[in-house]
Image (spheres, one colour):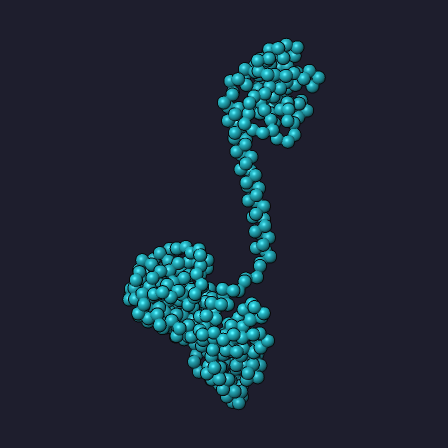
Length: 384
């Protein structure tokens, strides 16, 4: 929003004087305040106006908490625009809120001339925003007389010193038929007079408007702008309503890079869920083996001492089965874990599970489905 638009917003906020501060909260990147029964929304560096829309989800950051504590139920005594600039001041009995709406914006809580809290800390060569520091508004940079604003720069750049804003500067130049890149100090007296006439005409015909292409709002303004000559212009009772309509219904264009990152994040979250499930399964299997450790050790010890011909008889009590051809044995236990895809028999084969024989070592791994496996290709021999 521009200097000229903030000037109108200050007018629209005047009826709130003598009402009491109720609350402040954060909704996304915007701060929402309530004074009396009226809601105000401020997106630092972007907009400040009365709003009728309610955000379902709001939070409290440290700035909100401090403002609530210091201004609770405090009466609003004045609303003003500082130096015709994009700085709005709400004066309460218990303190002041400065809304610096230039650049990326800031909101500063001031008491007795000192900064108590701010949305963010900032520092320039001539001023600093931090708790405990004396608050100084930006030095005046706005020029109110058109003739004094003109310089050797492009006329469009020169006129930006006026308390208007870019859309309105472009509009008066279009109406006066003056090239934006013409040097400001090279304009003729007739051209300067034409600019002054168009400036007064624009100021005298201000009305809150919202421009539509189809059903979608594309901008709002205080003047009928030539740039939107082909759009439908709808007049509204206040600039706050025009801005509210525009920002509420406007959809930010999708950022392809953000969409790509969101897709990647979704895949990573899906992978994380799978890993968590695998972790839970493997932990359960480990607990299963640990609970039956002595039984498994006894089976392995028996299998190690018995010959291939006698091992099936020796392990009969443990439900062990011998595959003499493949030189494998399988012992099954009751397990809460379902068989996984692959070798559902739970048997260990020399070609897969047994890599290097380690004499006297037992296999610490569970089968893929149930129990524990032991390769008998060269007794005594253990799975690695």
